[in-house]
Length: 340
Image: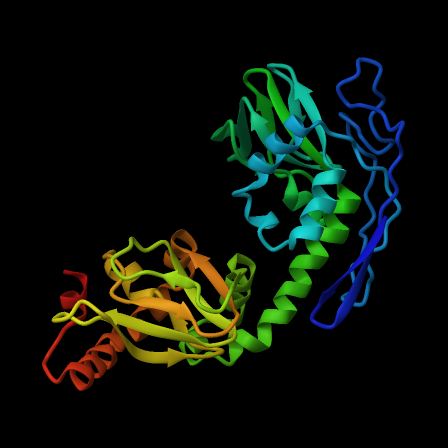
């Protein structure tokens, strides 16, 4: 099976090789991949990645039952590094991951070792230790969720922590080659794709270049069909939206007739959903896709973490919105009036 994905005009070819008799990681006689090792690797040479590289990699897919597949999908659902992958890329990565059971007391990774694998926690608890003032101290516990091991793979540096299972755990492992080729290159290409787009948005001029790149990493592209309601007046706020493609209508309910009235129209590069997040109040308006729309979506946690420098500018928009309300209804109204 083979396929191709277009990303910013660059072609990424995925060549998949499925072996019907591929070994089952749960089999007692299972022999892990050749580069799987519990011990130290003598050395790791840097594998430079180029934006022109095609992702072409013959590989063995680790077979999974439907039950395993569902568990894996749940385990990676909230892992940030997976959110930049499209559906085909995600399936490629999930195919490459294999299940690993770790007994209580075993070190999964050890400070100073070179990294072979990235791990996602399916179940169980693990403690994370780092060296502080010459002593290893526990700084974190993974409790049936989370992921670790990516930094050593991304930067070709030794492991920065020791992680020990405190009870029997089930982990999902991804080899360094697949991680670097697909996950890292996808992140690099996503940053390149968003760089020009984000630089052109006046709101984001308050951010430093590295802050805009962090923002690019956290954005998730979401598609909406023409006529679909993206946010609804009165709903709780969970996300911030930047329009990548298409147009949207902003509508509010007439305070006298309770019918929806068009307030304004938004297009590429404009954003919405910020005020409810800033003031932690329900949505003051509905936004409906006028055409098929693509939005870069930022969840509330990333919004608060990454867009702090822009909050003052967003707050200034309140007066703009309220001026439009006055023009529309012929009386002085505030944003809060729409939330009642």
